[in-house]
Image 1 (tube, rainbow, N blue to C red):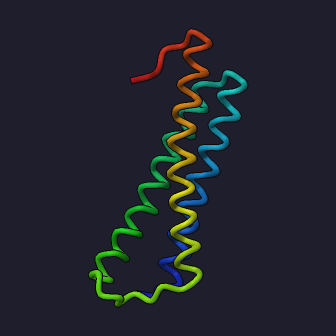
Image 2 (cartoon, rainbow, N blue to C red; image 1 turned 120 degrees about the vertical axis):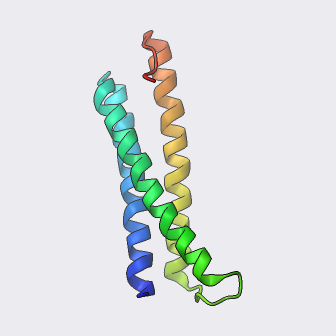
Amino acid sequence: MDLEVVVMELIIHAGNSRSNSMEALRYARQGEWEKADELLVAATHAAREAHHIQTQLIGADEGCGKIPVNLIMVHAQDHLMNAMLCQELAVEIISLRRELSGITMPK
């Protein structure tokens, strides 16, 4: 496993998740609910990909320090946690916008 490549993939997926969440918020502000929903789905998919990579790294480490923790690894973790928080908040804010607009949430 090329650790640097794996960590960069984690950062890329986390960044895509955050970007999609923020873009979904912009579309929701304009009342473009279908596009906002598409972007939230894309954000969820990207976050899952990043989380999957994180889980692989944790499994490879086995809690024994087998994976070196360096600044880029910390940076990747920070990106993932911010993306996950951004996604959760985007879902809530979009739900509130829908509620205020009298629009029901899709199933």
